Image 1 (cartoon, rainbow, N blue to C red):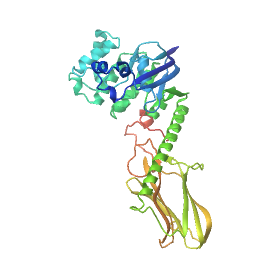
Image 2 (cartoon, one colour):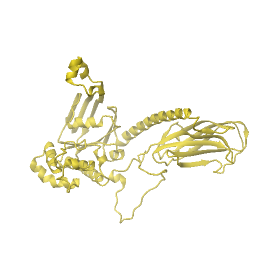
Image 3 (tube, one colour):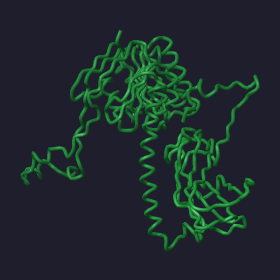
Length: 432
């Protein structure tokens, strides 16, 4: 049986610029531009002919970048917003946790808001009274339930809203990213209750940027981009396709920033020296590549990198060293090495050639890094030194601190009760 059916749904918003902000009806009449003033500056298509079905009892994930139409879609399914065109059919009682604090009146107490929200979701006052203690206990707000909601933190808002949404016993639960504001102790509790809903074959529509949780709890995943469906299907395959698209976008954005920096460096050459040496041996070209040989500038921590240098010596030279250095954005050296330190013995270089350094796994934390490359004599005399002329980005979902990310794992004795990340739904994707 189909619980949610969305057919050719399009939602178009009217966007007005600042010139409309202080326009009044009277001034528009005086100027004679009333109809022109009422026209929007731009029409924004939040959703474009979106069609999909969610079977009863399915946990259906929706992923995509900010502005892709995820929240708009949930609001339409919840009945908060109407589609510009298309049709939505929902079978069963719907409970939505979409906007933090939506439906709460800030001036009245949490107790009164529980009753108001419960009635809005279809419960009688008697039914709410029976569930009231359970709602407050789950939200962990026993001490604050009679305080005005305006005094609540964002985490308290989320806890109360989630607790009400799940305790009205809905057939369909809509959740939009609100778990992101929950504290470390409460989010696993929410995920446990979501797992309970799944076991009871309730239908869940789950929007989140936490891809590991989406992959763990969802039966199917839909990827939205620019209001259009890019892919629907197996969670891992859909998430991988989305991550690949994000990586390609980051590559384009980083390349643009890198070129802008190169232009700035060119204009600043008089004030800052980025390259020095008489170039008896010249480094003519430097390329960063994946282990498959594709030129790129965005890497994951678990990924390898090839540093390729095209070099040229105008005459025979017997004393030479090639080296690299990797620095983070604070200028801290993360790694440096050269052929002399690694006991390579120079014999002869003449004419053109290539020097390739293969780093099997970067193991760096998330951030921007700068690369030094150099060729010099064993005593340090520089032939050609390039300082911070090349950069790359390490894009990671891990939350590490410091510089490097060494491979590691945790072990605990039986006396220590602790849930591993994949069970709590808080682990970041290991695919990167």
